[in-house]
Image (cartoon, rainbow, N blue to C red; front, side, top):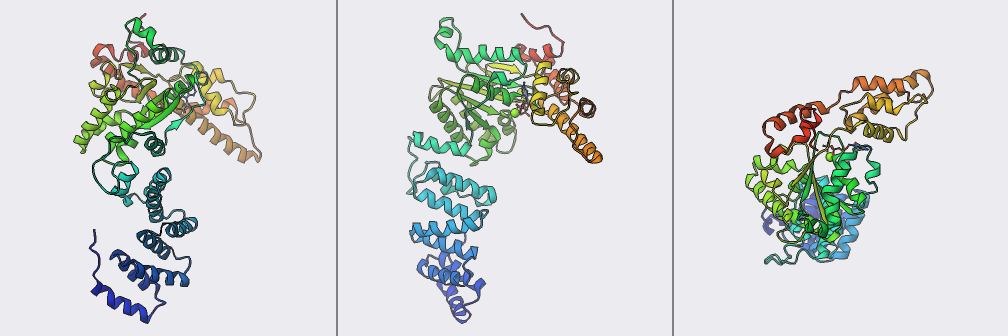
Length: 455
Ligand SMILES: Nc1ncnc2c1ncn2[C@@H]1O[C@H](COP(=O)(O)OP(=O)(O)OP(=O)(O)O)[C@@H](O)[C@H]1O
Ligand SMILES: [Mg+2]
């Protein structure tokens, strides 16, 4: 941090400014020094005079707003900074000041949003004090963190932090095919939540989470969202990378807050996407941080601090073998399901969805296309449709009129897009064959036809 400039250094500059009051660059410089050294009334005077010369100057506006904030003339500061933001919506420092003012006036939700906007435009603007205040942790006066920071108010603010709370409009009927998968999800996680007493009576554990794994683009995220829709629960989508990155060093707290939010929203599906990022994190430089995050995650899963009743915990990964074995202990992700590439009916459904708003010709035959795309993921099918649309556009240009998308074009596109899931299965097969503790990856072997499905 720069030391405040001393008065002796400012004096000659003030005199120079008196000689050439129209010199805006000098004015900004001197006003800035006054602001830094806490000579706020003088700074205010310089900024205001400057703004009479150049009313739209962003530096002067920001300087004046900061000065007002320092003088506790909060509403004046608001007016100036909001005017600036109206003219320059991407002004990161203005957003940061706005965030501070909002925090000062207890408008925490808006403050969090403003702070995030500031960081989005300029990530170097991190302000640890502000961040701590926004998290309801450290009151501005300092002192120990109060333990009641999980009060509903605080949590409502968290929603904006993670932006993940949804009410999904899709349910299982929007998931094409995948019947056995839906059945498994009902059995393994929906019913235990709906009939906990029955399950307990039969000595079946309830609680714990479901880990979806499989090749990319095959509907893990989609299925999790549909599960929430199926039980009319809210849905919280958490990208593990987001927690690890956001507010660096605060990941444990973030996790705790997310779980608390889910408990508050119950019934709720709490979905951790790319959960393998936790494992990756273990190997990188922030090693010790990684370990504490994992421990926090595990203890939240265990419901060590608070019961997870009414919270369906789901997670997805492409690389389950990277996850610490501790994740799969009873009560944690003790149920694990392979989300295979879409089967034939699923592919037809996905294609239908993808073609819904497109101009298609009479020749389109979805079942036939579905039959020709074994091994294609949902994302691959999207690529097929994209390629087909492109060549349809080219033909339309040539013809000088819009042509509908025909079966032939889609079939050509299938020839051009390779299914992406084979590579994943090549890797997965090795794990399934050579480190398949307790038959964990039997589903992979069954899918590949290496093992017979168990009855
Ligand atoms: N059975 C299905 N029915 C309808 N749409 C599907 C189905 N499977 C996949 N899709 C479509 O494919 C898209 C990609 O799926 P999704 O993003 O859920 O894959 P993912 O397995 O989470 O991939 P990643 O591992 O890359 O995160 C979805 O948005 C959805 O539109
Ligand atoms: Mg996904």
